[in-house]
Length: 184
Image 1: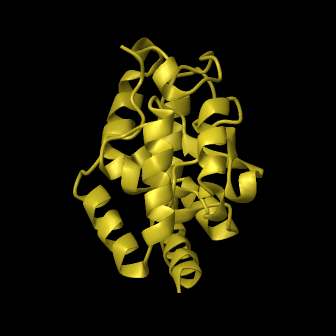
Image 2: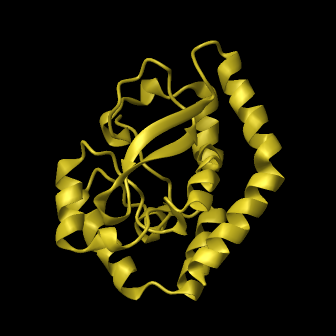
Image 3: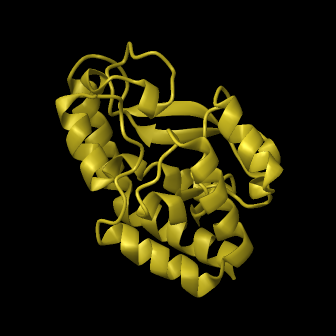
């Protein structure tokens, strides 16, 4: 049922919001720093890597690092708006449709986040597809706390349900969670 929900609503989302993704990507690229879409390798289900798509919120020359290790000055003015409204996540609908991600699950990390990867592996978190939103995210826990994050991710994996996922989606839409914070 979860995969059917993911396929149906990611397809509807891409059809309905495809124009918005194009407009936002154009607006980002208009700043002249690089493309509006951002592709990054992330760790997914079973520990396999995949290419995750987002709208670019940081300057094009920003080093590839976890958000909490990236200075706040790396985020563009328009990027702050996109991150606050979570619009930067829209291209991940493609990842959901392809099966790399789900709407709800542990947020995918970068391959260089070794401590988080190991904590998640120890707790069997990689049995689930990563999500656009998740239990830890709506609780305001980000990747700067790898052990705490892995514990919450494992709790999600152990107790996940379709109705629980719908509740997490609603909490996210209602403004729950702040996503990954950047360094101050």
